Length: 592
Image: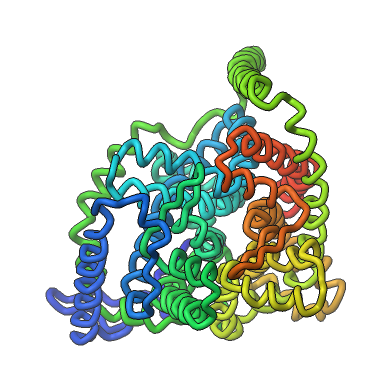
């Protein structure tokens, strides 16, 4: 067991004392003045671009502007910057939500009974359903301002990012290695210190990789969040998603190609400048007793380590960190008793169950009354049947993705050199919106005569299979190097190696990937079961097409019925399959 290291690489022994005004040259890369200049210039440019692009979010808008999306390729740099700003705003919200929600679910047994099933439901609610509520609410909050639409778009992207990150971080909290838990208790860390010094570092690798995948999920739903159609009223925001949506609707293959090229540049650029440095930095939190022979590297991270500016910023913010540590003591210390009164526990459980159950029952009764007064409760019949077709596609997708991507993910995760090569490619594939492939899919289906009922599985896979691949990579990377070297020394190969090392090592991460891939497949069915290009529309039989049609028409009763049925299917699948696998992972396969 080792604490987080200051930097990956072989141990160099203790550093000699530093002399005043001159950093030590032992054990670290030499400082470079040019690195300070480059980093400072990059920060200033980023701040300028954020302020410049952000000015366009508060202008007035007209609902008649819906179809007037400017598809001039010269506007793509500005549109790309607007989309990128929304993506990072949603990522910041997702990280904050992940910390708060996952921590509450992991630390409170009673809240866990409500928050985790609620998370199952939230990840199953389609982005379009969130948009229906978000657009109405934010437009009322910011009447006539494009800021309302921006907030709705950011919220929609947030709903495509947050759930996967929350599931992954929740699992890392509940499967914290026992020695780290005992260390925190023995030193009587405050709960604030325990989170930042023990729990967050322990789950950092999975958090970074799930964040990278969630960011890709945001790209996948970019078209739906920037070109919004609610209650027969269309809204559009400047962005790559709305640009691509307009080009696809017009059947302009040339401008669709420009959108695809721009998207590829954005994904590769963000990967190089942001995600690659993060994944290389996260290796310092690996739970192992010996250093890996190969580590990930990043040009950007090496540049930051050469610069003095991060260290200077750390010294400036150090008083703030100490103040937060002192303020965090109000949350108590990590020496809570292991035994509690059974009578008090049962009384609290009963009271909590009655209150939470009463709230849920009230909501269901109110929903039933609304539907009974509009369409009648028979409205659930059609989506229940259509859900079976979508369920079959989801099961096939998860099974095939497991067989195909788990071995590939393990191979990538075990090889830092292969990770450096594969990460940009995987990131591009995971981030690629299925909508951009609609022209190719329509052409292929029409030429081959293949039904969209089968072709829709491929489009669903574009939005869901990557959860399994990314979590397999993260799980393989988290396996301590000393365990792998021990297996090599013992000559354990082939199937026995999978049974003794790989499957137990990646199983917790795989379950997280499976549960989010399942929910992502249901969500992706919204844009995968209705394919439009130019004047041609192909519609599959399924619940996703049902919800997409209800959203387009502004049919709230049928939309609510479709969302409720989709939530029912997802929760039932999670309760019967994935949650049991979660418990198995906690009992048998955590690195204790």
